[in-house]
Length: 320
Image (tube, rainbow, N blue to C red):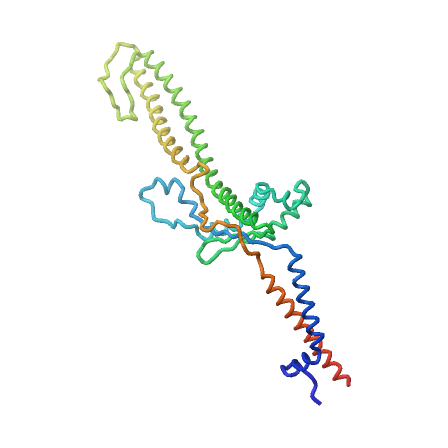
């Protein structure tokens, strides 16, 4: 006698034989799925998409160099990888949690290490950052509140832009401050040399412009004034004047550099991230809908019950 197997005719026989039980369990599975769907909180996904500029577009060598080579205004792979790393970094996470008060909203104690770890796990689980083939970045954040999901996603992008742009701005700021310190030193040296020149001119009675650094530019002919140390005075004035003129020239160059490094240092300038699609209030919850959940539950109940009944019939037949 042929034994029941898992071919289609045997399965149809099994369904007909145990149709009442299969229908009852399928219906119960559908009801359980409906209860699960209604009892579980809806989760909404805030989704934003942005492009990344080449951070070097704001460098002084590119801004003030008329002979510069054309470079890509979009970020390369390394910059995209840094953005992906930064979006999930601790420095961004802490700032977003603080700005959005997520620890308070999720009822977690951010003052304890245990609460901080729980908040970090929930944050990391809700966040997803991916890169597409077009070199743009898609960032999503999942929350039971649709408005909060969109707000947190937008805030993460804003903080990432602030931190990443701030790195380059801080670098230019440090250069600006270093050049400023050097300029102040040169100002002090120029002031000291000016005082020395005034004393020398008054001592030797020489008031002509004597400057080898200016190609011996003189507004009038240098005449002997009868001072016994006239020659010595000319030499001393030339030496001091040369140093002063060189310092004045260096200070002018440094002032120009300082002004260049101050370009784009304001918070509202030289943003690295360009948001293409900001996160908006999602209308539909994440995942499958209620009707599909019920249908999936009924199908799973039907499927597993049919398989179990088929195995049971097969086992009983073999025992006989």
